[in-house]
Image (cartoon, rainbow, N blue to C red):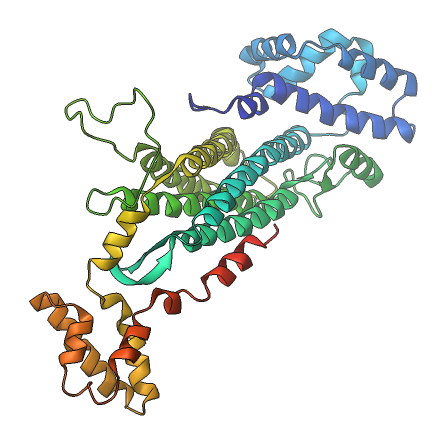
Amino acid sequence: MIPRYTPKDLGHVWSDENRVRSWLAVELAACGAMARIGLVPPDDFERLSQIAKSVDFQRLSARALEIEETTKHDVIAFLSAFEEVAGPPARHIHFGMTSSDVLDTALALLLVEATDIILRDVDDLLAALAERAEAHRKTVMVGRSHGIHAEPTTFGLVLAGFYAEMVRNRTRLRRARDEIAVGKISGAVGTSAYLPLEVEGEALKSLGLRAETVSTQVVARDRHAQFFGTLATIAASLERFSVEVRHLQRTEVREAEEPFTVGQKGSSAMPHKRNPILTENVTGLARLMRAWATAAYENVALWHERDISHSSVERVIAPDATTTLAFMLRRLTRVFKGLVVYPERMKENLASMRGLVFSQGVLLALTQKGMARQAAYAIVQRCAMRVWDEGLDLMSALVEDDELRPHLTTTELDQLFSLETQLVRVDALIDRALSLQA
């Protein structure tokens, strides 16, 4: 299930050996809690603990899979395989428990482990964005709305906005981690019929988890839906950043460009091509992330105390979604660290609309002179349309307009066309963004 580009550390999290290791960790935590209240002989628990330290999890996993061919039940196969290793003391393992006590609690452990890796990847991307935002705080470019030139901004401010968004995403991911760090050791329908509540509480605490408030046979899947929904939200942000890079790399724009390494080829047919393949890839993967989140939401409504329809879904989306998001984060970190920026081209594009990006300042200045807003709008729009249609620059069109001339001097117009005036608060906005702490 894990894509071939799986980051090495997340590949380990979702390996068969680590899955079995997490199952045994849950069983031993429960058994230890039982031993402390007299349900399990302490000597037997000590023996089990010593055996667990020397377990070959690769071999145990392989043996469990072999037994599962007969049992058609993964947890029973695991328990049988461990009993072969541990001998008589293993009779205490799984006392009063059901399979989901093991599976759901272990899934929580694995999701937390995966999330901690993803959080480090988020931090790496944040560092790259902060560094580039600082470096380009004075790099002037045109801001666009609807893909059309709007008003001046700086590339540093664009990147600072990405940084602030990723800070919010880090906060969301921390909350999702807390939401998912929940297990259960409460039996077949969540009633704790055969185990005191203190066993569940103590066992889960030793694993770094909390107990589900009221479990059924499973931990409620609204928690998982929120978790995978959060991953999809982060992926949507990464897609937004990627789309920006893709647009800036378009030939007609060419204000920034993905790193293009020595020996890299862009096209089998056209040797000149340097395509934004890294960010296109991230854009495509974001679609998968949303699909997996949808599957997690479908898992919330299970029959009564539970059915098994969620299980097959989670076996796919848990490794695939966490692994894919880590890959996306690492890919975009590489993009922003190596992004090639063309400040002169940004200036050229800013100037290409011949001053239209300063139209709002003229409009506001006319209203400050006492003119009604709609009347002022009509004058500036009339001059702007001449720029579009006749190839004039906006300053010339304004100076030639008989209705505007009595209200604004050439000196005043020059001030309105000043980049310093337009961008006077950009440094403060970038500082505000980069000061955020997740």
